[in-house]
Image 1 (cartoon, one colour):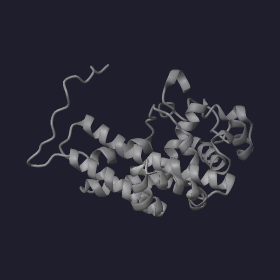
Image 2: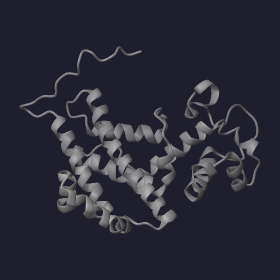
Image 3: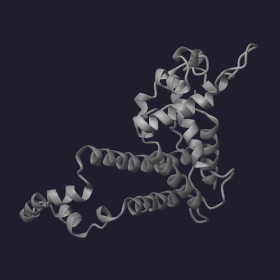
Image 4: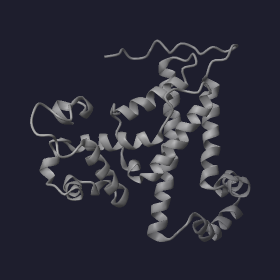
Length: 253
């Protein structure tokens, strides 16, 4: 990060007096996203971005001091494409469904998002807006720690599904082996497995499960509904108020 790990949004884009900047962080970020969308995240180097903008790579470090800063800016910029409302609707299930569906849409539009594994959340304006909306949707009488856990459950489901979708797309592009062709090719081996009688649960999956044969959209919605049902079971009702968090939680720093 720039400036002794100071958030890029805490560093003014134009510092002090002097000539007006030739570029903006937004221009640099949008160029990086265009390159990453076309050729992958690794391709979005300062040298490549500079060539796209028609300048030298070193000049861009005045605006975006480090690779981490660039990734933070790119991620926050695409989160803005989710275009969540200014405030929750009052229907938590509808609001979380909206978050899930728009997160999936953004990741599918920008597959390089799946390559980012960053436990540290950058606090850019779009992420903060999304956070306010998501936590506000679950502000129905549950402790803030419960909100964290429930939203982690939701985002974990969405991100796992979309990573799988992106990997399947890459696999198909690389090998031409679609899920349907993979199942057809595996059919003789699966038949031999079923004949042994040693795998009763696998037999139920093969004979009865409908989920593997659904469209990706239907699979996503089916799983999402199950996650939302789990969240619903953790929310307070008049007969079952949400318990306080355990006393064993670690002390805050």
